[in-house]
Each structure stands twice: as structure tokens, then as C-alpha cells.
Amino acid sequence: MLKVSRYVLYDIFRNKIVIAYTLFLFIVSFSMFRMEENSSKAMLSLLSIILIVLPLVSLVFSTIHYYNSYEFIELMLSQPLSRTRILLSEFGGVCISLLSAFWIGVGVPVLIFSADETGFALLFTGTALTIVFTSIAFLASVRSKDKARGIGFALLLWFYFALIYDGLVLLILFAFSDYPMEKFTLLLSALNPIDLGRIFIMLKMDISALMGYTGALYKDFFGSGKGVLFTTVIMLLWAIIPLWLAVRSFRKKDM
Image (cartoon, rainbow, N blue to C red; front, side):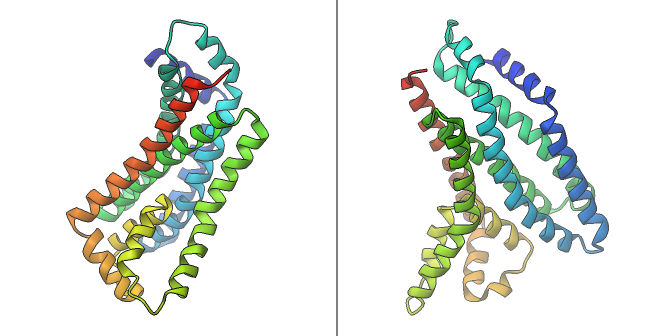
């Protein structure tokens, strides 16, 4: 399994896309901190970029890599290797490459300019989102044989989680504005890893006062050890369940 993952890593770094992604993240992150005198403002600007770019790149890059590696996967299937080990090796190689890009491109500037609780929360969220959306991308890729359809579905998923979901939540909250919805919004946040990550980081920036009573509720919950545990468990479920479904489908798939 480690040998296959090493080959996948070598193949990924050879095409230089991950290197370009790393440089992009580093330039943007470093520029944010240099342009803003207040590191909190830089973190807020960086958060907006991370919540959009990381899921998009993780979904699209993982999907394209899977389809480009189709012949290699077929070759591995002819070897005495289980399908589970092959897919997990591919997943591990892609995750390590994307996480390396994130930690070099964003982690280094954050540790230099904002090595505090907010900075570590940002790094935790970025790491979790990278793994989660790589897992979702593998599920989407395994379920579809057609490359164009797989990439299109990945883009549709990003569009839903990054843009459409927030609109649906606002519609629900507006429709039931006469009812106490504060605790229900905690459940709604768990249904979208991007929203969960956004709330988790924003509350570390101590701007919950701008969110009214709901912000106070979030602050009490996510500011406690229980909230950190809740965020960690939900992110783990978002990473594990799609990957488990992908492995299950891959084991039954006719190549």
C-alpha cells in the first residue's frame, strides 16, 4: 500500500499542478498578512479564500486524477492486491499531496504571522476540508465511469456546498422566523462541512457579537471542549462515510 502511495505521489508532483497550487496559496496567504496591519483582518480575508478554493481544488483535482489514473488502477487490479488497498493508496497519495500544498502554502505564513488559537483553528479547518472533499470526490468518481460526467458532478457538489446550501438555510430560517431556530441551526451547520468550518473559525475570532443571539449560542457551544469535539467528530464522519461508500462501490465495480 505504501509503495503504491509513493508512486501516486511521484506521479502527482511530476505534473507540477500541485506545485503551482502550493505557490498560489503561499503568495495569496503571504500577501494577505503583508497588506493588513491587523492579523485578524488578514485571517478573515484568508478564510473567505480558503472556504472557496480548498473544496473546489480538492474536488476537481481528485476527480481528474482518478480518471487519469484509470489505466494504472487496471494494471494494479491484475496484481495480487485487494481493491480496498488500491483505492486507499490512491486516496492517501492525493490527500498527502494536497495537504502538503496547504500546509506549505497556508500553514507556513499562518505560523509566522498568526500562531495563535485562531491560526490553528484555520489550519485544522483547512486540513479537514481538504480530506473531506477529496473523499467526496473519490465517491463521485467511483460511481461514474464517464470522465466529463464525473467532473461535472464534482463541480455541482462544490456549487451546492459553497453557494446553494447557504441560500437554502436562509430560506428555511426566514420561513420559520417566528419559531426558536437557534439550536436547529447547529444541526444545519453539521450538514455542510464548509459552513461548519466557517462558524468554527469565525467564533475563534471573537466576532460572535455580530451574529446576535445565535452568535452567543454558537460561542457558548463551539467555544467549549464539547464544541471542538462536535466539530472534530462531524468532520471525521464527513471524511470517513464517503470514503467507505467509495471503497464499497469500487470493490463491486466492473472495470
